[in-house]
Image 1: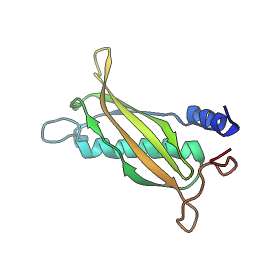
Image 2: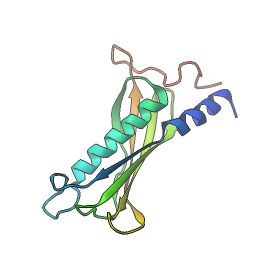
Image 3: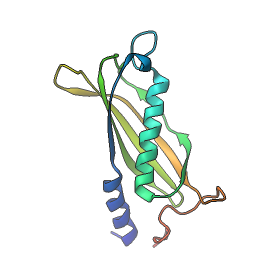
Image 4: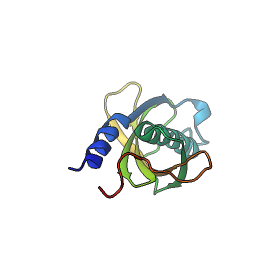
Length: 139
């Protein structure tokens, strides 16, 4: 493993982000389930935190990959969002986010939503910069 690959592995482990939330009525739609837009906002926030923890640089969201809504999340549930770095480019980072559904009063959990978000690191002039400036892309 190259020094860059070792550094990516180290930072990836440290960057994992877990956030738990209760799904309250203001977060739900007319079906009394978690509103998809709210879920996507939570996912974008967790992915942003994960990417920022990885590189500690200013970032912008440049795209989202497919977001799969596998199960409706009823109001009154607990969700856990888990963000993990899944790909590192020269100036970009891709973060996968999984959203797990838990009942407040029963054991168990299931994967309800998953998706991926891509970020680009930028400088003060809003131009892309290397996410790992001390480790060239091609070592």
